[in-house]
Image (tube, rainbow, N blue to C red; front, side):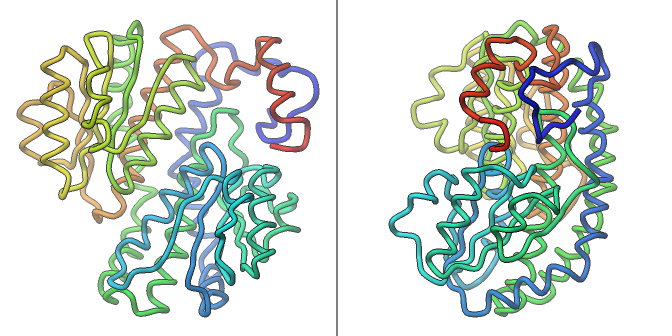
Length: 381
């Protein structure tokens, strides 16, 4: 099943019951991270060398790839000097009149053929930019567009509902960001060394989270399969996880879902959740724990099903939350690599409980396949 190079004809389901291909891809995340670490070892340092004279950094992509770019860019926030970086949707970046000259632009595309992302990289190069493509296909068109590409993962994401490629792209960008911070002496060397060491633990930690949360998320999906709306909230690096999780619910179960930055949902959108809603609060960011707690309390009082994802041993939210998922200890910067795992499992099992095939979005239905060919003519995504 070629997820990234579709034919003109509608797809034919490879599997018709659990475990679907999406399930396999989620469970491949630990190996995909391990293979990314191994394949990029010694390769990524040279990228930082090409960026010595760059002061403006852009991260771009579409859909899951854009959220991956967002997560990967967050590493630059640990620097003690302000590095100017922006996450810009690929369509916006390709038309961005204020795109800085001599920029550095990172474009994430699982397939390496996403037209809008390639257009954004071309636009960046037209402004004397140095461009880096993050992809799973080394011989794809992004190789001709970007100045340098990084091939990540352990092979293609074979489900059209991409999961494992989200974290592999973000991991490569995180590694590049650490090298960049090191090159500019923008963070304490001990801090950067700790991050490098912690990155090596991610494959095993994600495996542990898969093993410890799967049955819980399956049960939660079964209990809430009839709910009508789904909300996800997180801050900093967890914010792209909230967006990605909402996208996965929409892609696999075709029902309304939204992702928010935690403070943003508290300014108006909080009035939407009710007894027919499920709200996930990613609360691993210590600086935002009070507002996360406020959100948990408020939504619980309104009758919503609330699921809090926290660090193991967290006390405040655990005392008021009915559904609490604890994550094993890791560097604070890297918790988003763990917190997305139960969200993926929940989205997968929601789709299964509702009787859908999560591997194909809605492409098995001819009308939706035809609509897709309008949006993405062959060879453009």
